[in-house]
Image 1 (cartoon, one colour):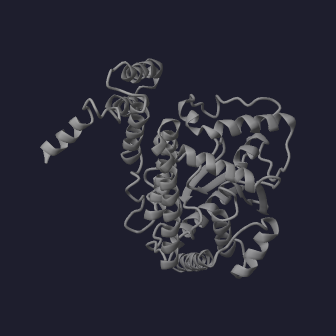
Image 2 (tube, helix red, strand yellow; image 1 turned 30 degrees about the vertical axis):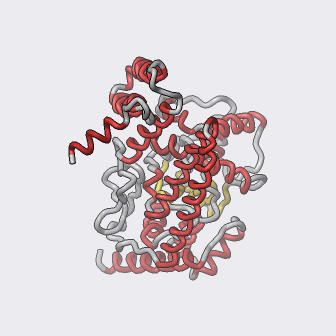
Image 3 (cartoon, one colour; image 1 turned 60 degrees about the vertical axis):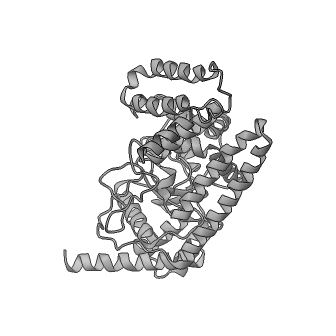
Length: 411
């Protein structure tokens, strides 16, 4: 066994097979280790790792393709075995079926209802996840075909890998594959691997939200919207629902859009505390920022100075009853602690709508799903509620109501 493993390692270093470059892969893995542990020497560390990477091109047997493939190998290792948080091959759930909240790594959900029942996936939802996974997998295969022509087409392998990771997320039904952290960002490894996909998500958001309000008021203290609206409410001092902005804000939005096309930049920018951060005038940040409940798994949230919680859910599939119970309870907890709460997903039409509907049924005084849906459609007419999601909402709301009644009877 050990002999076979060492023979496989030697095969990486044969004169006729230098891709992927182990120097590149190891420089990324080792560099990431020291990057997080020694922040004061990051510049020398970056120069050192850059010299190692450039040295690959000075080796006779190496070719340029060895560098990106080596980088791919390194980032895949960091993605599969992250330094912090949950591995993409493990679900962040405990024995009760609810999210572990002792370690706020890729998601954080602190609620009072601690004994939620074990999450179950219906056959229809499972079938839909597999169909979506197969579509992304087909896209990955088609994206890899141009690489057969060589040259610049080899970069299409990056797109193929990105779509393969998304397919894996849906095939396993595991939102932790996207590795969304407690601060709303994806891990550096997930960001690099998913970058082509993230660009596609950003373009999709721009298309569907063009000319529309990114946020909408459901109640005075409960709002719904797109994750792209978080930056707007922050730079507008907590003002919701703006379709247009000042010239300065428009310019800021353009630059932030360009940065989001390369979200890996965020991982190399120095972090500032809320007290140190300064906002350009006249876009002063209000102290009364609303809380944000982010249920988007696949896209990073802009840096936010207000209260922020994330409960990542997969897009285009019905959330489980367990997910909705935790999200609705967390929404209510945030509402009690803060003046306003924004529940957001990619567009603000699907996952966030399911969470708000559950909240309306349990805490908002709506007598049935039809009344809750009618109220939400008045402010968010684009919302979608597939039959499977509607069943999950009603089941989650019913369980939470019974749970609350039991708590009153047996305090």
